[in-house]
Image 1 (spheres, rainbow over the protein chains, first blue to last red):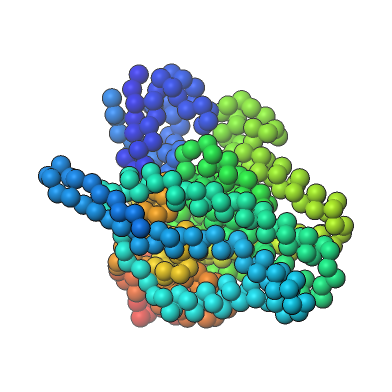
Image 2: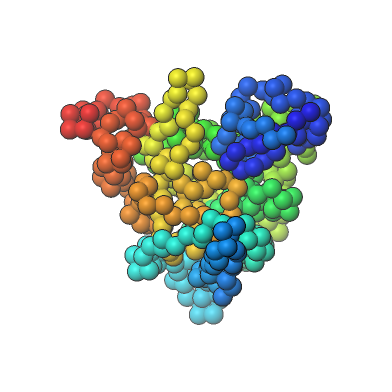
Length: 54
Length: 394
């Protein structure tokens, strides 16, 4: 389980937690997010922009 | 006046005093303008006072922008976290929320209980529509933040102009698609504001609904329920507006229809001028380049920025949408407007004047350099604009 961060607004997608508001359940790995995923906080950065944090 | 200080890792002391700190109190005036007219009418008995709110916005606004000029002051980047933690700034946005309710209900009471002449009714209603259109600006500032209180206040304030879908439409739709032909909230070169409105108003609603629909489907929740964040704000609007009809009768119907329309029109006007003609290029992978600072028009006028929570520093907002208004920065060499939004709205309402002022400015931008292929252009105006500018600039 890893954490990925938006390089623009610092939003973190934590695979352990998922994102309840957006409908991504705990345990959903980053690769499984839709291809057109954009940062839920800023909508400026795309999936491929996200950086592996830890 | 409060000074923020920090010592850098190299031992250097950096300080910043926000000279606009107390001037930000002026942002509380925007929702109150219509009440100034009502109070004038109440005290003197002259309906002419009801003209004052529109004058405060559209006569005084451009004059003050011209008089007080531009503001190029930026906070040092290292102090932005401290500036953002200062609760004073966010409390001002919180206070604006009930002020919009006070004005809206106050004017409704005045319209519902006085026998105003048709023109008194009209100017007061239109002015209130405009003032509550700026509730969408408050909702915009609040809706971009991550705290629960701010997102809820956004939904509550957006209920006044009955535009609850804006929060989702703007954050998740407009910011993603900005400055592309696919964005109903980015105006195209050659498109008048009246043509733009017919695309923007239904397009924004449709996009918000689709985004929320998708989210609720992922969560396996019913779309027609209070889980729907578009409907949450609409429910407040229904209670508010049906309540006013029940209290003051059918006079509220034309009042509410005009009020709501002009509130939406304020947003249409802002959207129209914020990205007119600007275009993000398509990359080899078929996606658009990331939104750059040169994909927004800016106005750095002191007065209107104080009334609008720095909305006019629009490039920095699109580059950093979660940044709070007090930290938004001015950059030179970006697309810039000759006046603040109040003045630009008036120009936009006269399309021939708008095209004369903006089209040359757009083509002169360094990244466009006269190349119409680098402009978001209205398909129906394409041939005409290529004939007009293609030979000189192409």
